[in-house]
Image (cartoon, rainbow, N blue to C red; front, side, top):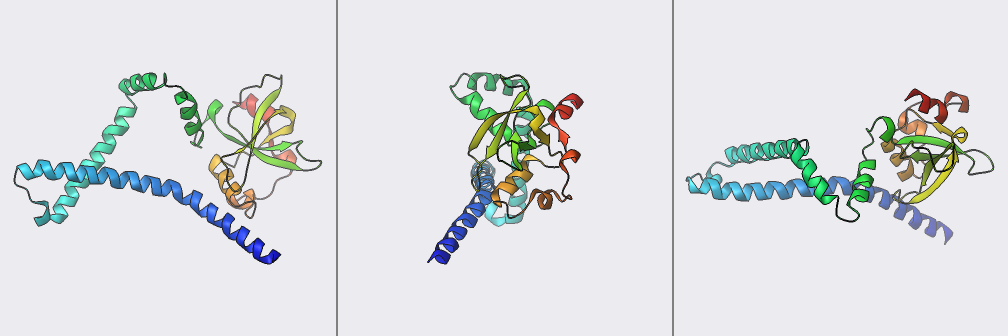
Amino acid sequence: MEDNKFTLKHFFEVTLQGLFWLLPIVAIVMVVLWLYDKIDLLANKVFGIIGFAPKDNEFLWLIVVMFIFIILLYLIGHFMETKLANIFESIFSKIPGYSTIKDIVGIFNSSKKGETRVLVVAIRGFASQGYNVGLMYSQNESIIKNHYTVTLSQTPIPNGGYMFEVHKDNIFVIEEATFDDNLQYLLSMGVKSLTQIVDIEPKNLEDLMSLDKWLNLK
């Protein structure tokens, strides 16, 4: 009976892992298909006026629609870099909760550098022995002097967790690991170690950079 429960639990946890890996891909595909469909519909009407029949020139029509689609993506990307985009953002920022949501979405950009970079860290002090692997979303000092905010995420669903204020002497930066690496680690529920995910050899604690040293190198 216990074996059956364990099997069902394992099946459920692995299924959740698959779901959370698949959702972003499905969302992107759905948005792309929706945009493509709208462009196809609009272009059909426009070219229909000049007598161009897409059904008689399917390959050419595919090239035309893809060209329009790529140009549209370029224009959207270019728009995001202009001052006009900043004006829209300043308007949206007045909506309650917008700034918070924007910051949370920004967290998932693991290529951030400098003060806004998400650090993967080893944290001493949450168990009688050993360390925990956590994240630092900000390297700003806490309200308590020489303390910094660290987060321990849940597994296999990493969108929850706990925040702690930890003394800098108890925080060590795992420089080779990124936010995405830590996400893989959480989704695997420890089946895959960070050394396997990052493809490095296990290190001694003294080989890791202390947070104090990392802050001085910024």
